[in-house]
Every structure is written in structure tokens, then in C-alpha cells.
Image (cartoon, rainbow, N blue to C red; front, side, top):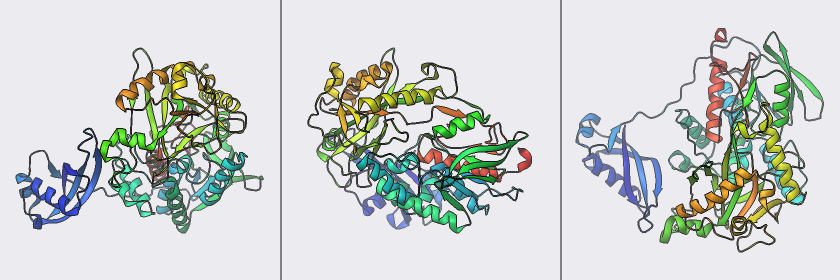
Length: 534
């Protein structure tokens, strides 16, 4: 197979134009091309008058590949070997079924990999299946009565289920492709396989997750919903079993010599239990900030100019960053085109927000987090769980500032930059389903964070016209972008207690759906490895 890189075509171009462009690069007749497949497609909108797509193409040819490549335009084509996943040999000798704690992306891919290897994993998930979880989340948004075990953070699919289903990642692991292929095989839009900004959408991700669950069960796996890990049974430095609370609230024990901890970044009570059980963990930097919400049309026009609204482009993305002189870096995160800001609390009396988009991304507003890095030196203590306490402090202040009923504190950008609290909203209607309270978000966020955001808004406005729109809405706090702890693990993916495999975002080894899925696969591979190495 041949990979052709950097093919620029108008956004209206179709299959015939792709074939013609590939033939031109290879300097061969189009009839010599047996197949032309889009490997990647990105939007180039640097010139607003000439917005176009940039393609990478996979091509099979009728003839000698080497001879055709020798004639091709220099630097434009190369040999390419498609990714093929190979399950490692199963060297496991234990007769006990492996246990996976948590059924977000890391847990799903770990359980699926173990099930494919014939190990029939047992999965414990503290929240509900995705169908019941969706109802619980909608009920919270309507009634403001929070279920602390089944919410935006907890339940089948993990926190990413109520986001954008965004699949962008900064890691280069070859297993990223396996995550994409599995999602597509289970019903995700096929365009995730080639889009430069792939997303599934909240409305479609639930069906994908359900399909993966059903496959795991069909291979002998078992998913126990509404079951929360409460203790470990350890002897001689090795795991011998777990203690959990079942769906009826009764304490149960389960014999186990292999436990994958895919608990997610918000399972604070579980992290505390693990720490008190002797599992080693360290502080980890994380980020804090606010959501910023603009009219979708403003962002679309700023990014696409006169091409804004074109059906092949959809709602516009952006990714911004800056580093104020002498200050901390700020960056946008989890941008949700045509999406909504959502109340994402998992603990009573604490307020958290996140962003969410459906597949169509056709909402009135577009939003993104603006985040600032928080280092362990800012935690106020050298205790491994000090970052969690800082998050809780911020979220508790935000809950009170919002009115004590899960409304989120919000402030207009113009008021924020003027140092004045907001008393009313402007032309941008905030989308948070539990409502917002006009206020001063400086009262719940650290000063270093708000000072950096104020500077970043001005700098980012120069990168994206209209970003500092005075009526744009800042909704706080965004405090769950990543875990503030890392559970240490060795080269065999195990922590200091043998047989326990810290995994994914909650353990501090991932930062999104794809990287969490990859880490789940890696941990499952470690379980399959020769146990004599452990």
C-alpha cells in the first residue's frame, strides 16, 4: 500500500477529484489505482478566502509499487503498512478470573481485551448502565438532586460519555488505532477513522458503549453495576481479594489475584481507601479553570470566514494556548463546537462544570475550557492527596457562590476583565442545564488561575477574533480535567501491591478517552504476560 501525504483539495471535492489527485502525485493513469481511501482529512482555514481540506490517502495500485513510487512526486508518497492488532500470547496460569474496577474507557478496553483472551473478567462499576445513567443525569439536571454514584462522572462509559466523545489525543502509541477501530466496529461514525478532529458525540457514544458491554458479556465477561469498591484483602504484599458494596448496599467479598484499577479521575473516596490500604501514590500536576461560551456563529465565522455554515465543515473547532510573560501557561481544552456547558458534580455540596456536544454539534453556543496548570507546590501540603483537597475546596466555594443548589457561578468576560462581578447576563445565553448565578468567579478560583486567564483572554483574542467578546460567559469551575494523583506502578504495570494494576486517568496515566483506552489495553496485556516476571 502507498500513503500519499498533503493533498490539498476544495471542500466541495468528491471521490473523482481524490482519485485524480492521487494519480497526479503518483504520475500514473487513474486506471492503475485499484483503491483510494482517505486516511486523514483536516481543515486548513488559515486563509479565510481559501478554506480547503488537506488529505492523506491510502492507495493500492495495479502494478509494481516500487516502480510507481520511483516516479511519484518527491516527498509526497511512501510505502505504508496498515495497522493490524495482534493479541499477545496468554501466559496467565491463575484459575481466578481477573477483576476490573471501573467501566470507563480504560476499564472497557481492559475488560474487552481480557475477554478476547478467554479470561472472562469480572467488572465492578459503581454507577449505572448507560441507559439508566442517562436518566439519572437528566434527572439531576432537572431536579438538582444528585446521585453520588451515577452521574456525569460515574457510570458505564466514564466521564467522557457526557462530553463530546472527543477522540483527539497527543500520544503516539500504535494502539490508538485499535481504539478507533473498536469504536467504529461498535457503531461510532466511520469518519472517526480519518477525521483530524474525531468525535462520536454524546448522543451516539452511549450506544457504542452498550455494544461493547454486550460483546464482553457474550465472551463470558460479567459486569456488576452499582457495585463500589470499598476495601482490599492483602497478604504478604499481594492482592488476595476485594471488598465491595453491592447494588443492595450489602458488603461482599470476592477472591482475586489480579485487579485492574480503572477508577476514573473523580473516584476520590476510592483513592482515599487505596491510600489508607498502603498503595503508594504521589502528587500529580493538574489544571483548573473555567468554561467559556460564545455564540457558535461567531466562532464559525472567526475560523471559516465566508465559508462559515458550509455543511461539509460543520461547527468550527479551535485550540488556543499562550504563555504570559513571567506567568503560567493557559490553554483551551475539550472544545465543544455547537455544544453545551453541563453540571458535572459527583459530590454533594460541590459544583463542577464540563462541556458536551452531540454528534451534530448544532447547538446555539460553542464552549471550551480555559485551563491553567496547577503544580504540586500550589497544593498547600506535601500529602499525596493534597491535590484532591484543593479541588474540593474550589468546588465547595463554587457551590456556595452559585447559590447552593447546583447553579454554576458565571461571569461575563467584559466584567471579568474589568474586575467587576456580573449582576446580569448579556447577549449570550448560558446553556448550563442547572442554571447559572451571575457573580465573580474570582471568589472560587485561585488568584494565580484567574490572573492568568485574564491575560490569556486578551492574547487569545488576537489568535481568534472575538474570543474576548464582552458578553461571552465564563462558567466555573472546570476542575476535573485530570487526576491530581498518580498511583505509582512498575515496568509490569503493577503497583507496590502485587497483582494490582493502576490504569487510565484515575491512576494518572491517561488524559482522555483514547489514551485511557490504550492504557486499558496495555494493562490487559500485562495481565496476559508471564506471571513469573511479577
